[in-house]
Length: 115
Length: 110
Image (cartoon, rainbow over the protein chains, first blue to last red):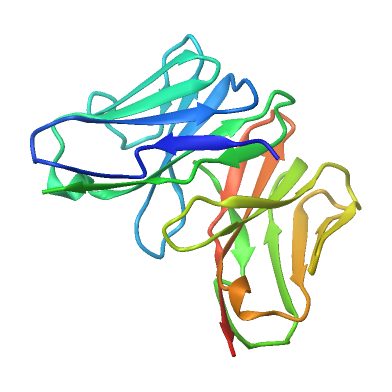
């Protein structure tokens, strides 16, 4: 099946700094990628939809200036958590829609810890 | 965004038992996807369904695309300890917008 890779898988950063998470579709082109946040034992919470070459669409309640999303190529989307705070610590997951548009594949997830 | 109604929320079963879970939507879907998520990892696609009435198997897993196009079912036969995890459904409507279920947490007791 199609492969979506996230990097880094784990990152620890100091409060007030910014951290970038990458999401790559390794064997297909993805015009649409999605970013989620997940708290322990809870469902995926969609943060934003990332469209290649255009601005991301953010879900209600998600600060776009805090969570910067860039989808500059058909195989890469990045999520930058700016001025991170401990409450931003979470599991962040990306997914990508395949070229046919009717299947979504997920990345492995990235654990962010802000200290 | 909108979420699908997935049930049950959690299941505790004995090893060897069969498992059944479902997702329902208030609108018609063109695609149903089933995922499994292990703790600390991203969801992995188990089965994809694209036609109403379609029944697809993947090993001990079987999923069906409901005839009404508003629901889907996932069955796991003869459960084993490694089936433990959270199972998510996802569906795409006629506008190709995806929605996710709230997940079913499965615990298999050896």
